[in-house]
Length: 61
Image 1 (cartoon, helix red, strand yellow):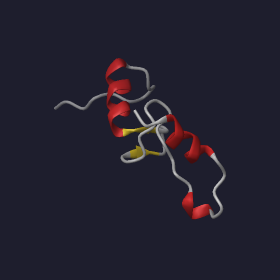
Image 2 (cartoon, one colour; image 1 turned 60 degrees about the vertical axis):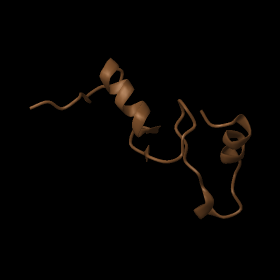
Image 3 (cartoon, helix red, strand yellow; image 1 turned 120 degrees about the horizontal axis):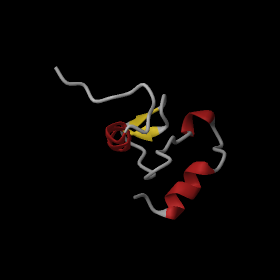
Image 4 (tube, helix red, strand yellow; image 1 turned 30 degrees about the horizontal axis):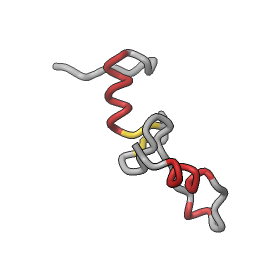
């Protein structure tokens, strides 16, 4: 989990548009962020395993 101060800083409007920091809405992680779902790779895997993301499931072959 990211600190509350870091999450609050990321939510502020940046001075320049290139400084936008996208963070996972569940844990606040900024690395491994997947824009299509708005979560990081770790949370995406957990949510997919629980079946909470429609149309997404773990691959097995």
